[in-house]
Length: 236
Ligand code: PEP
Image (cartoon, rainbow, N blue to C red):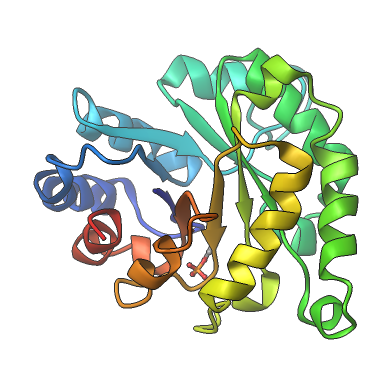
């Protein structure tokens, strides 16, 4: 169960979140929990979550280890800080920051080389779904962004299926729609791959989504910003 805080919260708000959140999930043994926070909040998050059952992750990284890349953050930097996870290829990065399947693969390889586990995001636009292209889009994103990983590298990722039209919109894919898309991904990724669903997951729809055998977990944006709401999702 992973949180994507996007560009929300200050370090002080991060500290307060964990003070409230950790007691609510301390008995959750059924899943791994990760909170992917903005870069500036990572030290506060890592400090607050130390010794708990909650791992911390970044939301992006650059593929070089270091160098003249103003404004970028590398895998070794995240790892050294104490991150365990990083999100790669979120649809907001694809839409607004020029992320492509090719750069998804580069970032994912660099993250794994740095010792991070990766949440690789895929998902179709509304127009693509309406044109009946969902399966083709997922196949293309997998072929370009994931298939180039070795078996050892694939063991270090989870895939998040996030239909773009369901992110931050309040529109959730029905559990059946999500499961159909997960089956398409699983056919390519294999039985061992963990596949998360993301897109307006809330405390009141998580149980129906998680009841689908194909859905192994959730990547949660808006509803992860509130400790009570995210704890209800974790403890579905
Ligand atoms: C996300 O940011 O990955 C996401 C799924 O957002 P939301 O839960 O707000 O739709």
